[in-house]
Amino acid sequence: MECTVSWTGASGSRSAMGFVAETGSGHVVAMDGAPDPAKPDQSGQNLAARPMELMLAGAGGCTAYDVVLILKRGRHAIQGCTVKLTSERAETDPKVFTRIHMHFTVRGKGLPPEVVERAIKMSHDKYCSASIMLGKTAEITTGFEVIEV
Image (cartoon, rainbow, N blue to C red; front, side, top):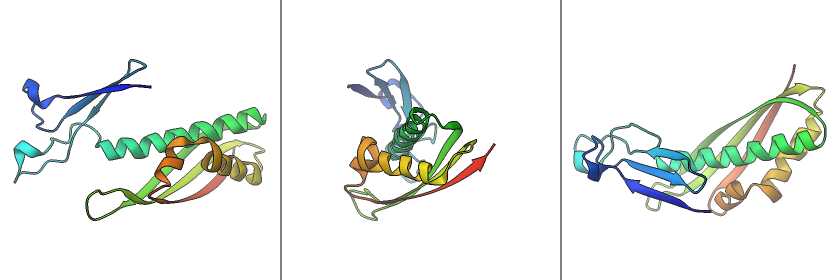
């Protein structure tokens, strides 16, 4: 797996701290920092997500992927899955994630809650490399609800 991240500020972009990542699979993701009027040459313009937001989103995507796949492989009638992540970070550098809560909302027909709970646990204990890696610095908790459709 590879990725190339390039600073866009050098090309005359409005954002002094904008970056573009091109993934090995050929996709492009923009990143930017928060504006800081006191330090315009060291801040962003809020034109894209922050790198740490993308890290959190990646963990959410990784675990949601696992949960959907586990339920589909079990031949359960899953029709939707969302995960809302909330987090806390350390106050001093490096400002690592210290707490992450993932709340899953899974929609389907006749989905037993214990099966959904097991899929989430399997993702977090065995399959989701992103959340397992983040779990080295953060306390990760989960919750879920099943919505019958």
